Amino acid sequence: MSTKNDPLAIALLSEIAMADQLARARLTRALPRGMEVSHFMVLNHLAHVGGERSPAHLARLFHVTKGAMTNTLNKLEISGYVHIRPDWDDARRKFVGLSPAGAAARDQAVRAITPVFDGVVAALGSERIRTALPILRDLRLRLEEDD
Image (cartoon, rainbow, N blue to C red; front, side):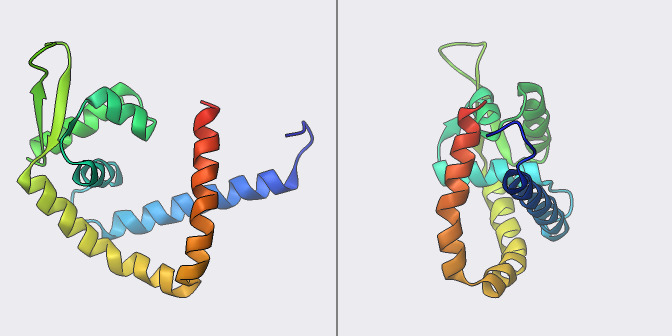
């Protein structure tokens, strides 16, 4: 990118930032009481991958500090949504797994947010969204490379 003020790049960044802020606000309002977006994202990830993951892996995946992920995981553990156990081979490491209560909370959150985002999909059209998803994924991957 040039050192000039590139209107296309700025417009792209502005739209992504605004869409992120609006999506998070709508998601926050729709989530069950007490559940934060970060909680949902971790629960959703664990539900999709199955099995356990280390806190360090989750921190890298979500591009947050280990401290921020520890804070999120502690809140999820207090709520009974995840189990955190030591690594039996290396006591310095831990593993996080989804509990049955966490799976139920994630499912409840999905039911709560689905109508909100179904409306967005209906308004934009599923074909337009299918067309945009590869571009957004490529953008994310490109931004991850620059980290």
